[in-house]
Length: 198
Image 1 (tube, helix red, strand yellow):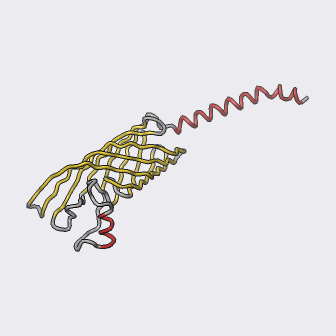
Image 2 (cartoon, one colour; image 1 turned 180 degrees about the vertical axis):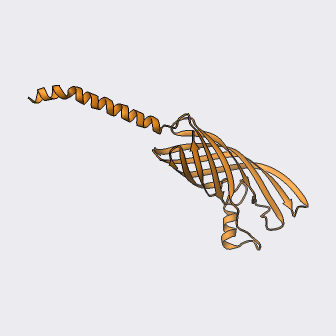
Image 3 (cartoon, helix red, strand yellow; image 1 turned 30 degrees about the vertical axis):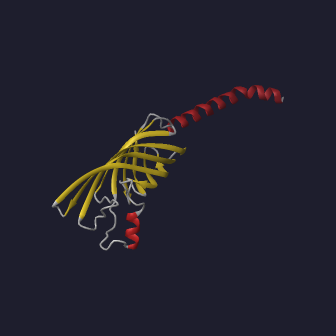
């Protein structure tokens, strides 16, 4: 009788297995990002464009008042585009503006004001991807272009290499989401923003 019952239920079991496989495949297809573009708008704090700059100089000065007339570092803004080459890797570029750039030889407390524009290529490796959540690391390299002005009477420009390393990145949401990165370089030690995949 058990054999008869098993034979009778086999077509039903087959339908259940096939349906589960189709559902699982469809669910995975919805979660795939390969071939998608991603546009991010971000704001970071304590950015460092100049790779020669003393590490965390701006942060230490804000906390401990090393310079006599120091002022808090202003946030930097970036627009980033990524293309998801595979499920685990995305490649793209970033462009941003810093209205209060700091460097090792001029700290903006002696009459000099420094503004910088940075453009860089970036690569992102995704370590964990779940629906609505990504854990990733990002690295970028490019160039900054900086204008220095002294009370509006003198102007100098310079350029140099810029880097960004963010070992910790968290993204929440599916096509529309938000993200948070912790690292060092032209986007700052902490930056966050909005993200759109299309």
